Structure formats: structure tokens, C-alpha cells
Length: 136
Length: 81
Image (cartoon, rainbow over all chains, first blue to last red; front, top):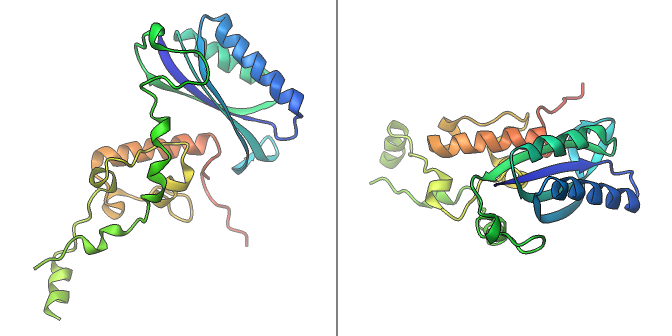
């Protein structure tokens, strides 16, 4: 089993029901292929860096799941057929994940780094190195 | 004055930001942070200027390319004229 994450953009004009329909459909594909959805995170409407299918905004959704390798092609095939999905990107997070250690939905699996993300935001002043070196 | 001249002779060695702070993670979903590594035109800033080490520069490059694909970052900025 491998762990993947797919970030995809749903058409921002679609209604609440459409968003739900996409969610159930994609989740259904994962479970239909014996995969486990570990998180389904709707990140909301964001501005796109460039227009995709004449849209300047997009509704981003990040989904984490565990499954075999052919699950990815099946999900991507479904997304390609669905008009509501503008774009998608799948990234492999980990090889060889033990399916027993994964709890479905909500709780993050241990190898996920997502939860560490919050504290690093304030650690950002870019040129803090200025005072670091004093050549003598 | 003297200090100035020496500085010109030996330009200050930049330290890789990600090596200095292991808390920093390179993530393609974090466009805000990756913005430091692209120019106004959207090009990736080379290692000799950004100061990244080879390993982290590769990771930054990959992250920027992924972010571009999913429209979190621009491939280019159109200059109106």
C-alpha cells in the first residue's frame, strides 16, 4: 500500500451540492478500489495564478489516501471525465504503508507532516542571516 | 572602510535557509513561502543568489514546479503594455 495525496481544483461556480457530489464520487472511487481516505480537506476558494478553463478562481480540495498504485490512474481518469474538476495533481507521500496503522478519515497517519505546519509560519523573516556573520 | 573592502573581496557566504532551520519544510502547497524563491516574473531564483544548498534547491525547484502545475504559482507574469 502506498500513501498519496491529490490536490484538485473544483469549478468555483459549482453549487454546494456539486461539491458534495464530487466529494462522494471521488471518495467512492477510492473505497471502490480498496483504498482508505485518510483526510479530505476542502481548502476553499482561492485565486488561481493563471486562468484554467476560463476560470480565475478555483475551489481547492486536498485529499489524502492509502491504496495500491492503480488507484491513482483510476482517480485521475474520473477527474478528467468530470467537468467540475478543473485540474488535479497527485503526489506520492510514502511507499509501503502498513494499512493496519491507518485510521480512516479525520485523524492523520503518523508519517504525515501536515500537523507540523502551523508553527513554522512565524519563523519566516527571510533575511535574518544579516547579523549572523561578522567577518573579522 | 577596511571592513568594507574586505567584504567586497570575500562576499559573505550565504547560508542555506533550510539547513539553518530544520523546522522549515518545503511544501508545494505553501505558495506564500515559495514566493521567496521566484522572481517577479516567476522565474526560479538560481542557487548562487538564493543561497540554498544543492539538495534544498532541488527540493525548492520541484515544489515550485508542482505549485505551478496546480495554479498556485504563475508560470509567467504577463506584462501589460
